[in-house]
Image (cartoon, rainbow, N blue to C red; front, side, top):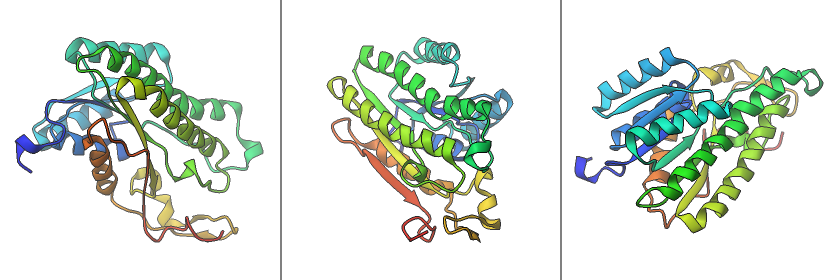
Length: 258
């Protein structure tokens, strides 16, 4: 694609959980579209390596800023740094998240519950809150927020109560953000991803518990397909919005009976 036609030329984007997996794939695709990228996560070494490799690959500007998105102080510092260096934010991708071992609901510890709530839901809220403050004040006003919802935002796996609860909540956060952002030219949408091939989904090929009690392997799709979908969502003018999109392996057992 010619450089003067790249959809993100000159725009500033923040991808949380951008050092690995889906987040890294999204960050690379956005950088290739001309976005100036900020990637954040909890592991500075992983972030720095990802930023350097993406920049070398795309020729784009990629900044790595370590941040635990579940910590309000660290999130405020992150956005202060973005405001100081770039003066604005055009796109926030709330991708950071984690999971707990697949154990019966009654065996989930309070610490596990609290940790996944902070990473998957509180982090998305805190980043959205800071993005609102910046996007409302900047000129031109407005921006876009894209939340990683997962297909667990609609359909749970067995023994996944904490993860599923946070992802169902992301759907509510997405809709509230879309509504509250409307008067300020802030659009918000959600991408629900089914079985993108990352380190977290390697276990799928070896078999995972299904709703009928069987253990079965599941197909995956390359992360690039997810990244391309996010680029499309981000490329729309702020007068248009993809509220929800599902990108999944065609043959994964989602729409059949359990």
